[in-house]
Image (cartoon, rainbow, N blue to C red):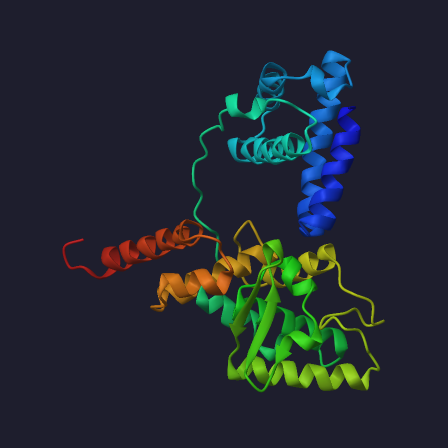
Length: 296
């Protein structure tokens, strides 16, 4: 079988059978296309069976020479691992060459987050216009900070996922796993007001957040909105929607929330993914100690 044909089959598998997000399938495709291009240019062979762990190692070495970070290379290797598991299952390869590929050591970075004072400034109502887009943008930021959901989850949030009576949202996360997130009284009121405005504007889309013409939001639009708003209150380098997810988790932990509860709210598959936020809390404690202890 040709490598390109196998890649196409794998992308169809993750999209329609695994039902992974468009963002994930696009990332898979990008990694595998880079892999395929390198092999065909370097070895001039398109047949899947012609490649083994030696060619894969040469690709990894090529990525390192190109200056990619260990984190980026690890992600690409993880993509290949998923790809070869799929190939084995389909019977298109007899051995898994990824068993001989070692992930580069990745240093853990502390999650970047926005300080509470800056978040309060960001969410002040006077920062937003009273028209549809102003109310929508304000609610998007409140939902991010009030629920910690991912970008794909926010775009996929439907009007029917909002239960104002029970004061909660239903979120469809990774691997189609549903979770329930409670909302505050303030967020409840903002959602209620926004739904009224939607009706007044004649918007009948099933998605909660749309453009003014009623068409769905798209990732780059939300990213630009968040980046612009964060730029007005903070100088941190990363100003993405995911930073607001980190901010949600960090502020919960700093204010005494249980780590297991935060894990469930974020939709993490295991606790180790959530424990990274404890490092920020430890750094905060060190700062308090340094500033407050008489002998520090």
